Image (cartoon, rainbow, N blue to C red; front, top):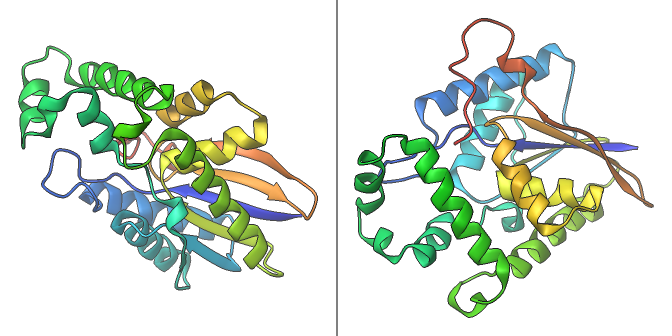
Length: 231
């Protein structure tokens, strides 16, 4: 069987003018992941990525530290959903620049407050009642993520070790499809995905199965826990 290594991007630049780029921590995570993969003797025969900047940067730094460089084949189906739109449809006032930052700054626990609001926003998006308000509804998102995985399986040829640099949403969808999970459980998977974690799927012409999910042991090898981030 062939293996697909689904790699979540490194930490993005949350609360900045451009979320879609790696933070300094995200760059270090990507390099540390590459070093760990090299030490484990993993080599990729084929590499794919979404079209987001954070996907490309993660792939670049990771593969550089693995000691080789393949140009990823771009599949836009591995892009994350528009989290800003999802949140703004739930709380329209957040469409104003810096409104979310001001809201979080006023909270006793900003991380918890953001999680509560975002979970509510995702529930609204998944529900279907307001599909007409979104540029991409939940069903369309699931369909394109599944199509992206099908594209990898149909174009990877004889490759036995395949990397896909993507985001939490598409990785959760791929995992959920393997396990036959309901939509609500697929959404919950994304909350636990660490930056630069690895989820491994095994497949052949007949089936695809989950080997392991959300492996971030490469960040637990010492007492420094600064590399353990969710967003």
